[in-house]
Image (cartoon, rainbow, N blue to C red; front, side, top):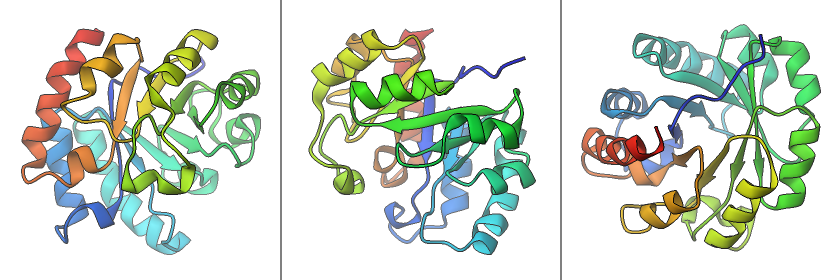
Length: 211
C-alpha cells in the first residue's frame, strides 16, 4: 500500500536554532507538545554523525507515533527504518527513493514554485513542502519569500498534500491556514522558543482546524 502523508505539524531539525540547548531534548518536548512528524535535517553532519543522531531520534518518534523522516539520504532512511525521506528539488527523483524505501515509505519533496511542485507530483511524490512562505533566516539560501498567494496557487495546482514552511508564526498562521494547506513545517517557530513544549502545543491546537 502506498504511503500517505497524514501528519499536520512537522518539525524540521536544526541544532543551530536551539540556542545551545540539547537538540534531542527539545525534539522530545516538541513531540510531547503535539508535533506529529520530525524531519532529520542536519546537512553539515557526516553520514556517521547522522546515523548516530538518527538512532537516538528514532525511538523518540516511535514512542509517540510521530513520523520519522530523513532529509535527502535514502541510504540512511533505509538503514534507520525511517517512515520516509524528504528530498530537495535538486535531489534524485522520488522514483529512485521509492526503490530504497518500498511502497510503504513516504516520499516528500521541497519545492519553491508551482512548476517544481507539478514536477514532483508527476515523479511520484507523496507530499509537497512549499516555501519559504515568509522571510526566515533559516531559509535564506532558497531565495525571496514566496507569499500566501504562491502557496495557494500550489495548493490548488496539485492533487498532493501541500505543507507550508518558512517564517510561520502565531501572527501569520491564520493567513496560512486560510488557503488550505495539509499542514505546516517549522524550525525556529518551535526550536528557538523559550518553551518548546508550549510552542508546539499552541501550533497543534491551531492544527485542529485542519482535521
